[in-house]
Amino acid sequence: MNAVIARGQWNQLRGGFRVGMGRLTDNSTRRFNGRMLQLMGRTQVTYGRMLATVGKRFHRLTGF
Image (tube, rainbow, N blue to C red; front, side, top):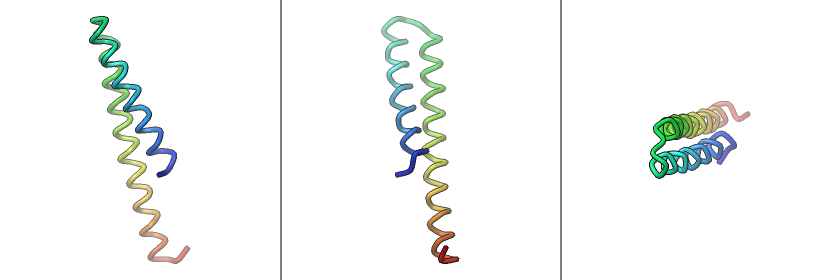
């Protein structure tokens, strides 16, 4: 697992916590920010997996 994937998973967890706190306090801004953080985390995880896959394929094809 690389740093991008780990950071994305952390952001998803942090966003989920913010959404929960927003529900608890009835704060729609906090819920929205939490959902945006979750979306950013999902994007980071997808991007990190894509980078890892491309790197493995490049290594397999070129040997570098």
